[in-house]
Structure formats: structure tokens, C-alpha cells
Image (cartoon, rainbow, N blue to C red; front, side, top):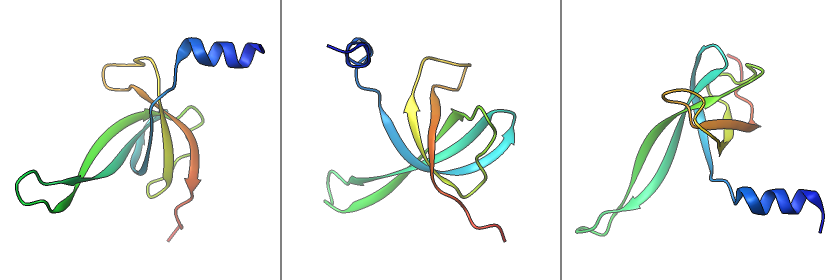
Length: 94
């Protein structure tokens, strides 16, 4: 058994979310909007819910409009519990 698989088993599977960067005005922190589709209990119609997450961006590479993948991590501050794993799609500079 390799050391990579044993460390992954100890830590468990981390949660992942995909969202769009709203703001990068803080140092090493971005605000990401994650949109989920939920079915209404009574009317059985789908609607969208948006949640904002604060994520750690170590190199300050994210820009507003970028689509990013977030990974859960230990609490880094009072509000930050997520880390930017990768930038999936770059926003177009206008």
C-alpha cells in the first residue's frame, strides 16, 4: 500500500464545490457563489439557490468571473473553510 492512498484514507474524501468568483478584493481570499438546483417540496418545481463561500487563494490568481473548484479544509479564519483547488475557466477581460 502506497503512502498516498493511506494518507487519503485517513483524511477521508473532501467536499468539493464549483462556483463563480464574485470578489477578490481581500488579500488571499475570494468570495465564490455556488448555485444549486433544489426542488420545491409542495409545488415540485425546480428553483436555484445561491450560497456565498469565502475561499483561500494563496497566489491571488482568481479574478471576478472565473469558474473555480473549491475543496473543504480546516478553518483558516472565522469565515474561511474552503480553498481554491483550481481555476476551471478564466473570465474574459473586458
